[in-house]
Image (tube, rainbow, N blue to C red; front, side, top):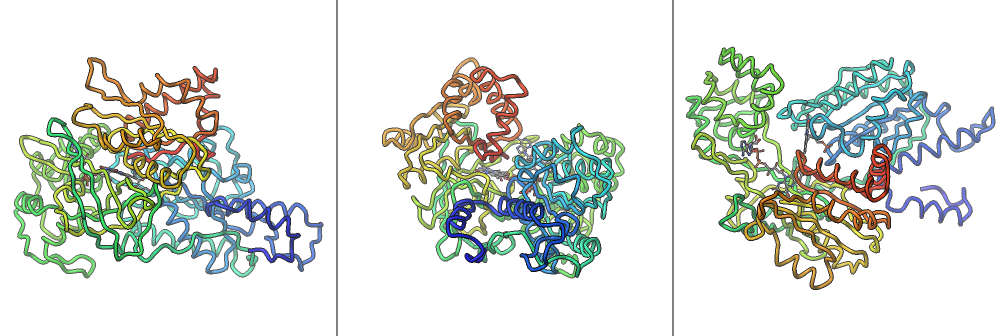
Length: 594
Ligand SMILES: Cc1cc2nc3c(=O)[nH]c(=O)nc-3n(C[C@H](O)[C@H](O)[C@H](O)COP(=O)(O)OP(=O)(O)OC[C@H]3O[C@@H](n4cnc5c(N)ncnc54)[C@H](O)[C@@H]3O)c2cc1C
Ligand SMILES: Cc1cc2nc3c(=O)[nH]c(=O)nc-3n(C[C@H](O)[C@H](O)[C@H](O)COP(=O)(O)O)c2cc1C
């Protein structure tokens, strides 16, 4: 905080007003901006008695940019910034869409931590930055030293695709790579921790520690509560209730979980992280398929456990990764599988449609217990959008869960976490933590209208939004678009929405039951049918949210919104794109898609 004596009270109040509600990325950007302004206002030979600012703002400073959809890359970037600051390096931490790309040509030392989303795409908060860098407008960067750390999931064909592209593009622009691009899988720290160690060493050398000024410019988020991803809270399941009817092709549950006895709290928009365990029957089938003894002891990195425990609690069995497929193809010594793994489209099919059992059945290979455990990816927690507001449910947290459950070659297959949760009886325990999602928040101004597009389980956060706005007595209107196959069997939370409409907590509900008529109707069709109102609400300041399926729905809704801007706003395609990007940059178009 600035000492009041530096500023007249009126200015001080203005600063307080400006800072209110800003996240760490915005604060960092602002402090960098102020440092730059101060730099410009200093006389040629500045007296050293003024508040310390970098002698050449960019020359002695490390900039860490992050791009993150669900917070992982942000967390890693924050940890890195804390470490560089702790050794006295002047550091600023900036969210990619808050970064002024005009500064790039003067930047001396830049680290980028970015996840990959979609199919090799940038997170929503980084689209403008990555597009700028890929474009012809990007300057040559011979002065720049850089390093990129990617976060991703090796069960996706384009593993850390966005980090890889950024890394090559910066090199192409003439920047000097300080270390190889890091590609962290879901067990993030395995790669991120050593990458950070090296990055810290490079930064110390590049900034010649000791010469750095004392002006650190980053405001970091306060330390999270003691419950973390790696130290979850063991919560109790209070309710596990099917909310689709027997006629439905889907098994969707409403879960209520108690957070009693923990320090956990959450806001609408956040997700609950859950550490699942594999089902005993799957573990037995896997051991049988490889002819392995589940009681045999397996030691990895000095950790000794029975094979059963490794497979139940510590390894993925339902999701394959490219490194495992490569290793399995070698062991199977099967040219057909080797060809499939090498060819991008058939690799995609293997990654998307095959579980470990499917692979072994079609392509048998011999594995001993230890190399198998080493090759399988560590089990990762799954995220679920929170479907409740604490203003309404106190210390509970509610979820809307789709049980991934399908047949393959007449055998039943499940998703690991959704099966673990569906199978859990009331009173059962589950390890949980909160995954904050500061980019998916209700408007600070309760008078703003909100438009919520959430087909299927995508409706979950909007149940939380409506509960929260109702409890707060928000005066803005709430408009929900919901869709699913059938009205009769798949209308999730039907009675709650009807009550909310009656009570004035929900002002408009547009429904798309895709298979109740001869032509398929989806939420994007309903959006187009209501184009005039949607555009008007948005022009009047409404916030629009999309949650649910990333592969098709989110893209179709995005395209529909562009069309709304063209037909209702009379915008050309490029202007429509800018309009939508503008809404996203203002935080009025936010997505939580998976
Ligand atoms: C931010 C976020 C929020 C989320 N919110 C929710 C939510 O509110 N509700 C919700 O239900 N989920 C939500 N999810 C998804 C959730 O995290 C899990 O991904 C989902 O439950 C599946 O996990 P699983 O462990 O059951 O399946 P996994 O074990 O991870 O995957 C099962 C495997 O089976 C394959 N598979 C699945 N279906 C078929 C099929 N028909 N044919 C062939 N192969 C198939 C898959 O490709 C995969 O390889 C969210 C995800 C994110 C990232
Ligand atoms: C809808 C969706 C699409 C994804 N696509 C990719 C991908 O193409 N490549 C990849 O390596 N990881 C992909 N991931 C995995 C994320 O990059 C990974 O979960 C990462 O840890 C998220 O970090 P963040 O929270 O900072 O966004 C995807 C995740 C989701 C939910």
